[in-house]
Length: 389
Ligand SMILES: Cc1cc2nc3c(=O)[nH]c(=O)nc-3n(C[C@H](O)[C@H](O)[C@H](O)COP(=O)(O)OP(=O)(O)OC[C@H]3O[C@@H](n4cnc5c(N)ncnc54)[C@H](O)[C@@H]3O)c2cc1C
Image (cartoon, rainbow, N blue to C red; front, side, top):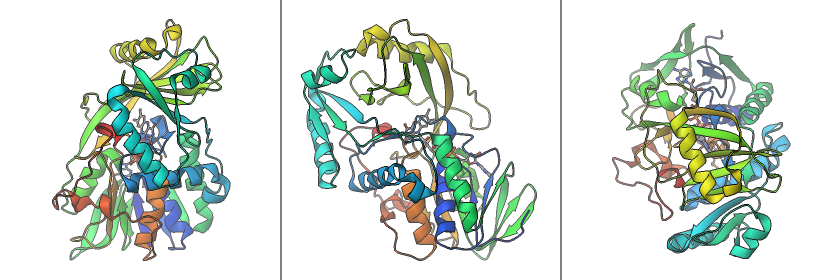
């Protein structure tokens, strides 16, 4: 293993790999990425990977918009395939959600994003299997959709090797060295690496990694389940369907398959990050199916194809912690996906890499700084809590 680098990134999920990719691409020199398991092994590889711009603050909308540019031009932007299916993203709005939903649409349009409001008849024409009880209209983002999260992560890592990225899978970081307050190296299970720059992208373990340099992050973790069902109808034209009324989401997962999960608001299901099951459990399966069948009655009886569980890492305002820490020069946080940061990974990594390299970032990440909580500048959302964000 190399024993020195210009930067070391800890964590091989979408946030870490994206930061390492763009740092290398900017010519930062020798960049090492350490992943204690395999790339995308935790939240990233289990993600439903929705790509949507339906957010209620300008920065997240801007980052999500950049994500669509990156994914729809992946060969050029990230050097290979990401499996982007621009199936569209449709949010169903009940009467009491109309005002908030339309505020989001205004923000999206102000950013230049294509958004269509669909009447009940127009939704029915596209999705005759959906029961529109309680629904006033739909909001469709035609350019949104979903990607393959593992393919995207591997493409980002592989293409950056040409620019000086070295990826070590199966090697965990065990400490951060400092001289005075400044970062001077990273300790690993296989020896130390001298480096002036470390990026903490350790996902659920980000609090632990931060504590190595005396930082405290307020994080929670929630177990999250997705299932895939074999449906009696074609799903080719099925967009990502977000139903905040019944609280589930569904997207195509194959020609006659839907991937389905629970939407917000929902309760946190706490987990032990060092000891939790990735297996689907029967009560959660029944709960997800029950919600889906209320909206799509003809899906009743659809056989289960597969299901899995993973984790959300959650901050106090459901937005990630990204940026330098003033008391630890050379250290950068890129932690806590909050259940919606697969899509934001590449644009966040791109802007953070610019910041580290002393270049003008495409997006100003200052609102995501880890010190925002003590400074009293939380994100708020007109659209709702949790990862609706
Ligand atoms: C079921 C589910 C569905 C989701 N759906 C969506 C969606 O539709 N759209 C969306 O945008 N987002 C979605 N998300 C959220 C998204 O997947 C996450 O926000 C994102 O993957 C977080 O990426 P990450 O890099 O922070 O974390 P992770 O992918 O968890 O990566 C962190 C990595 O750090 C490694 N690590 C930890 N400690 C160390 C150490 N000491 N040394 C080396 N490596 C270490 C871990 O092994 C891990 O691989 C979903 C998440 C889940 C669980």
